[in-house]
Length: 288
Image (cartoon, rainbow, N blue to C red; front, side, top):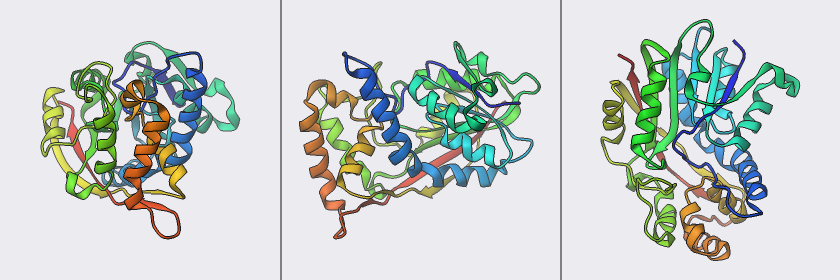
């Protein structure tokens, strides 16, 4: 099964909005920033769950919110057959480049349609991932619907991986992301159109699994530090997540960047690098 990448209206978690005449260019720029700066910050989360599940040959993996495809690429490197869905067309373009040998598009299907377009032709999926942290999606209801639909494309007992932020006191980036909350008016919440950040509750992942009709089957924590070469890279990387989009709608970009840099200043080291230790949590659930 060749890689399948499908444009699907999943809840946004870091997907950029496209408003105004210069929006497509901004979207492409932020997509590149995401792929080149920010996306790698979650590699420890991807690798830890793949190790735990034994992802490799025989794995048929569906990535919800696959973005620019790094998590899919890591799974494919282990021998897995991978498919991905995402709402952001610019990120899917990058994912196609990464997953298609020699950039030949005939080996990858990019379909504008429902999640069912990602269904494998030969056998159901046996792993589904939703790595984008709960607390960064627009609606829990929308994510629940996507997970329920994805579970219907998977074998009974298949693993479904849910990702989330760890305890606030163990996530240095939490204080920085509160800038987005403060600048947004009204503050971002789980409402349609919001891409803001909210602190994770202790049982958020279990509650989400229950809503989607999944059975919890273990969890873990992973250290995912956010490290940047300099302040400019840190600002660009964090803006690429989409978590500041609500703030950018009500404040000038210069102001958002200035206040973001001020919040990052305590995390800048003597050599100019920016370092923020974080802990992420994952839940392994099973389809019924």
